[in-house]
Image (cartoon, rainbow, N blue to C red; front, side, top):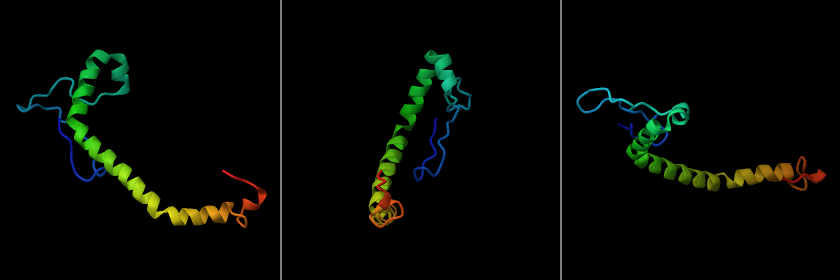
Length: 101
């Protein structure tokens, strides 16, 4: 199993279904929800292998996603505040009717 690495979110995760000798590994394909519900005994080990092979990329991606949301929130705080004041402030478009979120 291999993961295409790079900038998080830039590439799709793919799975090698060949072993080192070049023989197609049975059950090394992606696991669908139907497979998981239909035959959990065969699907759960594959799901566990996929998770163990890709956990590093998942951790890095989730860290950078959380970090980027925090940075974007700080960068966009002033423009969002201006928009909210323009809409919901005392002299805003719908602020005078007593509408609040």
